[in-house]
Length: 156
Image (tube, rainbow, N blue to C red):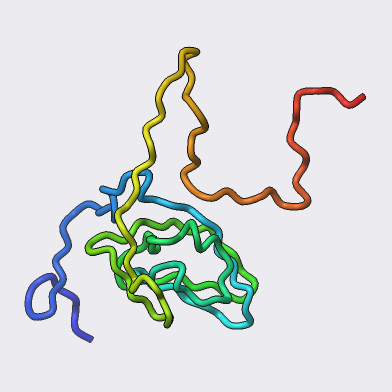
């Protein structure tokens, strides 16, 4: 077997250091959500698939995921075994923001529209924000066996 070198045909020359993918994404261009495979077969989501178009056996907040794709390296995917769930990170789809998709009957021809930045929060007279801050992404309910939150009051 021949030794591997960094010269010659087919050589791979890698610069020192590491690269953070999608490092230029603003907080409103990021999303974290839990995906559950409710089907009886493994399902994979590729790096550039528009998340709401993913296999219908995958359960997650498709409305929140509109315009997003997985935050993984190009050409890779995430695999979900039957019954398994996992928290995944997603980023907005950039470019022309048009995803005709793999499902038939889209009335919008795949147009995603612009990425909406969150509205600025203005301070009130009391020094706090006006209205409520918007969460970074959907939240999941606590597990059924989780203890109740402490409200600071002793049991009576």
